[in-house]
Image 1: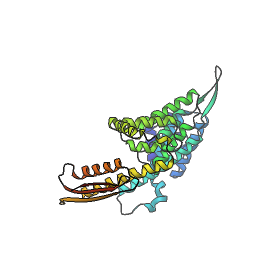
Image 2: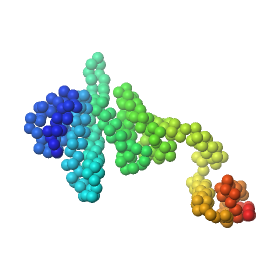
Image 3: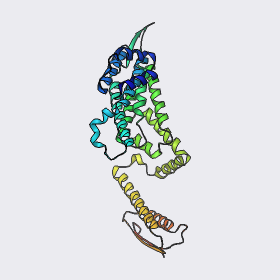
Image 4: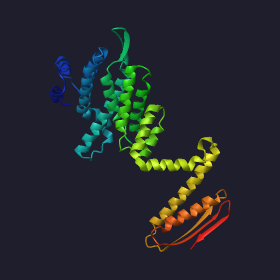
Length: 332
């Protein structure tokens, strides 16, 4: 690790408060990246103990820079994961990814050790959040790994966000402001790149408070647009008579089974349509289960006929039979 280069760049980027630390503690250069990280963490401990939010935040940014500079050393323990035939660029990318992962792990550790409140005796006793800027900076950095897909890293970042929100007690003004900041972060994160079906999966995650659920629901409606809203209304009307909340588990499973069978039939018909190049005719026989109603049997017949012939003029031989009414519907 090029320690001289690191110090030169750090001095150029950092405020004077942290440069003072550099001049004081780097009279003797750290011999390696591990000693450098330990020194910075030692300064952070001093800033944390004195509730110096500005300096602690500057040191967080210095720590991030140190992890980037130490990427090669930090990735050495994972060198067996790198294909030696890969290009230098891919090797460097792998090292930076390792450094980023270790930096986020360190941020989680630092966050858990931050004092949350302190008492202030001025015109009466009250409490305030300490190191608020630093706390939120860590939260934003860790939650930046939250992506639309439910990957292990994305889930871990979302759970960190949820835990941070749940740990804040209700009622205190300072805590409520921090909660609002977290909710705004959720709002900003769930832009149009989060698809409605992906947001539905995040809603199912454990321990998600109602306030964050509301943000996810708003994002789902916003990102899905009028088309999704109209679909939700149609689905709600479709299930209205079923009274889903009042049905037994057996009734729900039966309904799911019937819908699944219809979906499977749709899938098979679509596969036939995809493979029909050069085919001038299709012959289908659908045997309805004994529990299938007359109305559902007719719906299957009409839907299958429409899917096979819509706009194509293909010859179709279709027979749907069975069900509670012992149907016999035929075409062709």
